[in-house]
Length: 255
Image (tube, rainbow, N blue to C red; front, side, top):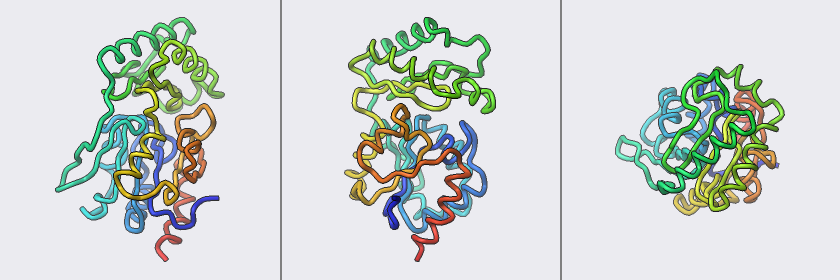
């Protein structure tokens, strides 16, 4: 059961706050600004900071400095953390991979994708990305249309097979199923649970006073570490589900 009055509400991004790699809907933007008026808010997802800016920050309207100061951004599954200070977004930390780790991760995920027949010929944008603290494989490319991406791996079997095969080759790193077509590789033990734990340390808000909302809370999903950590969670399947939940939560917190 969700916390009735969490001090901080954290969200996954793709398919939780917005369609994959797309800007948040004006309705969601309004709800987030209202939520910032009554609670701390965190967005923790696999995308880069630029993705957070395009999908969330650039679409928030009527938001003041005080509200932005309550917004915590954790790109690349919590391996990076940004706060808004003195009118700018500042990086608080980044758990970057070494050059050797990056090279081994890139080589392993490409070779394995090819071996499994998941290296597609029709793609949109980069398949492999070095995000500093995370290597990301996107089967159809970062800019693939949402409709195409949702059909690529309906039951998640492809990502699971790829994740398990790559993880076996990289025992010192963490390999996680990401978005609808992606797999993310970070330093070992550096996942969303790590991000939420660091968030608690840096904000002073204990994990028991946090609530997490995500669409991949299944055991193979990249939101699962937050659930396993013991943080109270709400499972959704789309941004519309999240909006319905916030329609109830925000007024409750405002009382």
